Length: 77
Image (cartoon, rainbow, N blue to C red):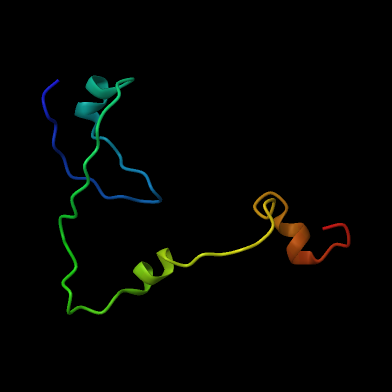
């Protein structure tokens, strides 16, 4: 297979493959190389979103499935 190049916006860890390339790539193992089209200059302040992406949280492993139980403070949480 030849090289296919396209631009996409990453959102929540997902890149959308353009429809014209999907049938070619469907079910194939591909190598992905990501290049930032708009590199951030060193003298620019870091954005709040860039800082938030580095935030690490701690909590119970079942927090996503039992969120309401923890928020409401039910006794068996």
